Amino acid sequence: MKPSILLYNPPSAVEGEPWIIPILLNILSICSLVDENKYDIKIIQDFPKIALGKMIKQLPQAVCLAISTMTGNQILNGLYVAKEIRKLRPELPLIWGGYHPTALPEETLKNENVDIVIRGYGEIVFPKIVDRLANHQDIGDLLGVSFKKNGKIFHNQDEEVPDLNSLPILPFHFFDVEEFFKNTNSRTLHYISSRGCPHQCGFCADFVVYKRRWNALSADRVISDLEFLKKRYNFNVVRFYDSNLFVDEQRIREICWGVLEKRLNFQWLKCNGDAFILANYQNETLELMSKAGVSNILIGMESGYVPALECINKKATIKENLEAVKKLHKFGISIGFSFIFGFPYDLPPEKMEEEHLKELKATMQAIADFSCEYIEGDYYLLFIFTPYPGVRLTPRYQQLGWMPPNNLQEWGKINLNTQSSPWISKKSLKTYGQCLKINWFLMHKLSRNVLRGAKSAYFKKIAIFVDNLAVNFLSKRIKQGKLGLPILLEAVKFYYSAKGRVQTAGVETVFKSLYGKLFARITK
Ligand code: B12
Ligand code: SF4
Image (tube, rainbow, N blue to C red; front, side, top):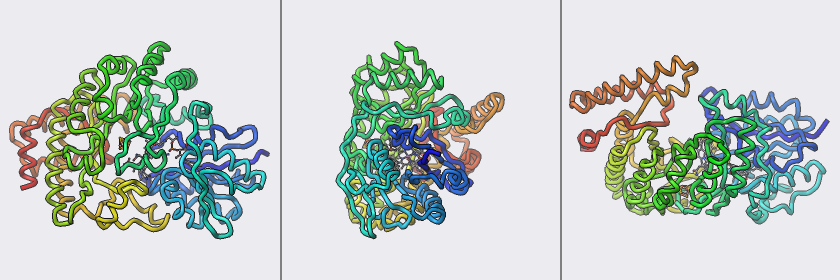
């Protein structure tokens, strides 16, 4: 029997809650150079108890258990499994990698269920570690590795950034892609064509792993990957997981040409882009993108308030944000607008609340302005500012009273979507909350979300119909001024609970003037 490698990607949700199952590009990447003739590769991403059940059979011949984790609940699920495995095979090396262990390797290693941390890229070093462990050899000289030896923690130097073009295509065959497609409304493939982002937004976790170095596959390579994957999986949508897909305009043009020439025929969905770069794209490129199927780009606009953008060192200005929106819309490319509230200004606490109110007004205004540019497919994501570990703004957060957890277990209890920051007052939070609710209603197109859960085509049609009726009715009432704020909030609550997990929103009508009135009522 071959030795096996156990790879665990813990769910980001708490057991019992719905969670998004991604195609595991992280795990597939670290396995791309592992010799599958030598090892049996077992990838698991279930909740802990089920995951353990799936590991038991291979445990006796396992070489290691490798766990990938972001900050948050993935850590708790990962720790549960690691702890149980430790009981069953105490000598089995437990390797951790991904965003959280890379941000805080020392603290991660202090946990008794962590033996080795791989920092940054895992493609080159992971297969080396596996071979060494399988042959009972020392790993002490490997770059990019932190480890424990005789109770002491060692951190080796960083590994060199790999040339992605020299690596093989991701071994998608290790993952049950067909099973995954069953959970999507279309045959949506996950793919990544570049790593990192060249910008330096101070709050962004991308810096932790990729250190501002944008590292991309060539256009030819992307096309040959997609051609191969199209034949194998016949996808009709690709969700690009690049942090910033559009950094190199020429590369994008070449990819689009390739897609058209090879008739790959798919929709590009929720691609991450930034307004600074896209505002400067040539119209020809945008037209080409649209022809090649680029239908939606997710842009971190972050704020409509200039000091907020300065606070995080955002490259794009408000003018560029609007320019990018107008340009993309002209070619029928819709936008996911992502905004954040509650920036950590370099101000004394007594000035913060006032500043947050100014910020809120400016951002609400920006949202209203963008809403006027609405095209089908636009949606909004609204977040409260949340500190991530290892980012550049960490000293500022601490100056403003942020006290991060000091061990791995506690980091697992942090919810990156709801954790509130000490510099945001309760009053500001309440005001944000009210504005967000109104936003959800004004911009929300319920059907998109209901649709995700709808299994039959018939039910989908009904969901769209009912949603359109409700949105149109309520929109008209608001426009006529016949719906008071309390009723509006009730409607919002109803929508909010009906949908369960609100994520996307689309603008149905332009509410600019009304919007101002509502806002004035809340903030007076
Ligand atoms: C796909 C994705 C998800 C998926 C889940 C991914 C998963 N693996 O489980 C979903 C959609 C569920 C998700 C959810 C969230 N995500 Co997310 N997500 C991403 C995204 C877009 C792509 C990740 C990816 O697959 N990259 C491709 C692979 C190849 O790269 P990689 O993950 O970096 O892996 C490499 C190395 O890190 C390393 N490595 C990784 N794991 C391991 C494990 C071992 C053992 C080894 C040896 C090496 C290794 O080797 C790999 C190959 O080089 C990234 C941004 C990005 N572009 O990276 C954000 C990102 C990881 N997410 C982030 C965040 C904040 C979230 C959310 C909180 C939601 C939000 N507000 O955005 C939630 C978490 C919810 C929760 N409660 O925990 C942050 C991470 C912050 C942090 N400190 O953890 C990122 C970086 C986005 C950002 N710039 O802020 N996310
Ligand atoms: S543009 Fe986006 S991905 Fe790039 S550093 Fe800023 S927030 Fe991160």
